[in-house]
Length: 353
Image (cartoon, rainbow, N blue to C red; front, top):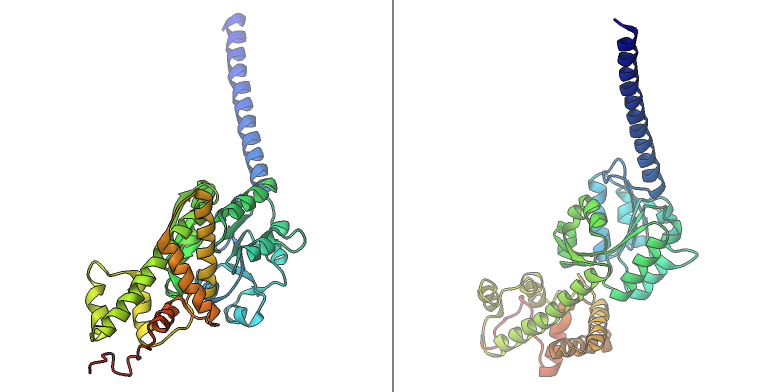
């Protein structure tokens, strides 16, 4: 081969070889940077073997929700002000932390479901003991308390400032939904983050993405408004049926498959007739929820008279010292207004009988 041709061939091969080396180096650099970014931001896949979960608030709802996570194999660290409420979970293998801060230090995803917005602020944003202070970059806060939409936006901003994520994800379905893993979950925040933690949500129920931060709370408040008037209608129908001489149990069974059928009848009809007022959802917490709704209505300039009436009736229960009963105790307020007491199923349900 002439020297000129050999030189051209070698130059051509050298050029391609250098391009290949350059391309390989670029790929290695890209992977290295991607891995470094993932390490820095704390991005992770959601599996029992890779994800540590923290939980703040193990009351009526939280305890059942946590049990599904433990059964699925997740490592769980819990905090509750009353130790006895966390004990069943500790017996199942959960770890106990002495503060929300300690929970977050041991977790990738931290859930909270507490009583009031002031509790949410304290357990998540307290500068000394709050969960956000202990969460590593890329970690996720998920508040499932029914709370102020504006607080959800504030938590999102505070989390973002620390390179963390926040989702507002209040739930509906009561204690039975929590036990059965069939809760409706209303999520607000970054959709990609909601999608990423969906494997955890799926163990508790169905997640519904509602929009930007705070929209999960707005959806739950609208849910509470619907339930409030439904509960008033349920107990008024029971009072009317009883006074009309109907067998109230037969009456509820009859309407449950018609247009008047509802989750409220399914969840609370039999409990009311059995005088079972144990809390699946506390009157105190419902009064709080409806108060938030009314405050938001005032901001919006919206008049919802049904909501206002329901809140007044539930406030009357609280005034009678019945705030720790379940929301089905609304029947007591109607009984007082009408000066009678509905007999339990063990008695005759029909005044004419």
